[in-house]
Length: 248
Image (cartoon, rainbow, N blue to C red):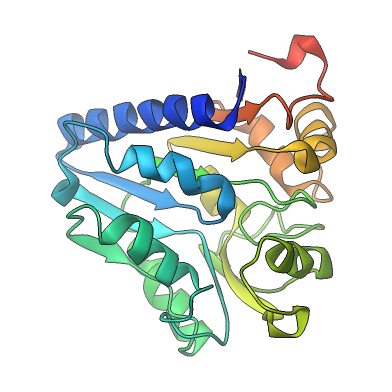
């Protein structure tokens, strides 16, 4: 794992987009296609905006998956991650093949079908964020580090539900779903490259715990320390509690 530090979220987003674009171009050149996993959330806004504007990417050669989805809300719901994928990616670039998780369907059927597609070939790059409680995708602490299942059905921690409310996705805590589909930890780690973004002072203590502490299910994103090609992009606010030696 490598950590990269930036003065602000704007510089971070530009660098992360260049990093991701380079990996996508290389995959297309080497394998005639690229498979990517996209994350959602406010930390991804600027990064995705710059990535979809990056030059010289053959987007029809890209296959898209996403990390997670709420159970019990339709893809048209403003807070659904399917809606997020369409609005911020699919309506802006001509990706021909994509696999959106539909939270309104039987979740067991959804994870079986999408999981089978995901397992067909390796993922070239997975984008992730970092939850305020250290979650990776919707793998809340204590996370399951053992299962090989590509997707899981999980109960959402109250801290995660509160974060979704605080970020403005839902009008009240009662409106935030209690369960979700998430890509498993081990499946995320199967990606050839992982790009994790964390910004803002409210993530600082979690950044320190996950990236300077021990690898533990109680800090799910700490597992990124074990991935040789994971790159964590931090702004100064998110990185403010890290030791200088940890910064790359």
